[in-house]
Image 1 (cartoon, helix red, strand yellow):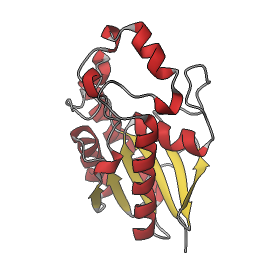
Image 2 (tube, one colour):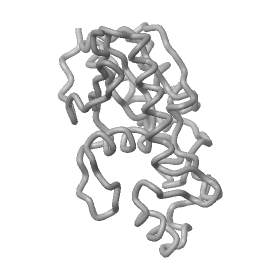
Image 3 (cartoon, helix red, strand yellow):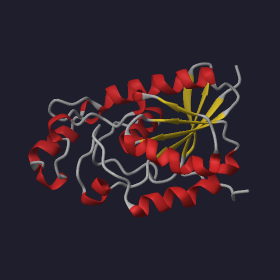
Length: 201
């Protein structure tokens, strides 16, 4: 089976991102700068030979995909498995208001990092991985733009890179840039990190 190529892109910045509030599976509006970023990125993404946009069903991801698609004009598929990590009781709170001991303890769990009442990073990785493998079957031989979330991108790539997801690890990539994942025969692998986009048409 020909491989499917995925280009993973985090949604544009939201008002809550700028306020450093935890969104999880809630939503806030895209910030003006985020909207401008998405619009400016679209021409470069057009040079990737994309066949489809696959996006999280959360509003901020859908809004980002919508802005990009004013230029790309591609079919769009929504998948709730590409949602951000569920942050449970921490959702809607400012990061600064999370007790330092609670945050440090949760982060020290690595893949088992689970906000109270939420889901673990391992669970995010599992559902997102299934979403990509399913999408690969439907898009064999094609390139797909995946508009999703920081937690999803980190979970997928850190798993493929064999990382422990611990706070003392140096960053493996810039989550604000486009990352490439390929799938062949139902197996995901890292294609390229922090890719340099071609000039748009």
